[in-house]
Image 1 (cartoon, rainbow, N blue to C red):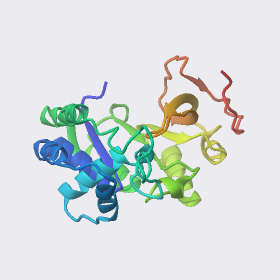
Image 2: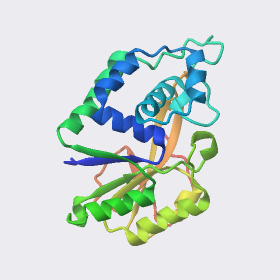
Image 3: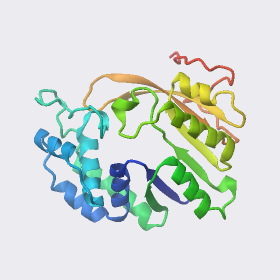
Image 4: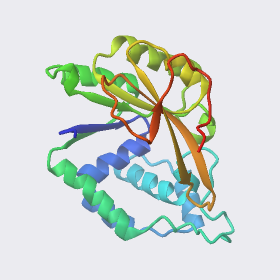
Length: 254
């Protein structure tokens, strides 16, 4: 288990939310309880361009809990549709008790000194900061988890997506220039397999799981890849290690 952690995201809304949940939780919880959850408010928050950290945090929270699949940007609409005729209405994921408990949990990690900071930064800046600020630690004492934008449907899902050059640049830095332990997650896409499968010093794992998108009754099977340079992979029936020579995407059979 990690003793200390730092969260980072390039999206200013996401970074502001985690910063506020960690270090300004009382304000966030009070403001959350005062929100009105309607399609009209969804339109207002979607169009808003907040400048301050607190308002960015509140926009992130509102849209994440009221937008289909929690998507902050792109073309996703409100849960339940504009007419709100679905049995899943726009407020179905806005349970105040549960959200309050989760935000307090983040704040407790920060107050205990386990969550050290939240950065609004891209992956290059984060890796550089880790090296500069925690260079006194041994390589095996640091584990970096990266969650880059998916390759498939990236423009629909993200405000800050990667093009093919950015995906390649990340792979090059991790595989050649990063001594720390690292783990990253991706959608199971042929381009990702081409970048990582068979490369020296890493292991690629295939994970298949079922999930239900917010505002939908349909359960979907989602294939993902985990790539890591951890020297030991614990056995589990929740994933399988890919053959280093197999770069062809295959759906796991039940």
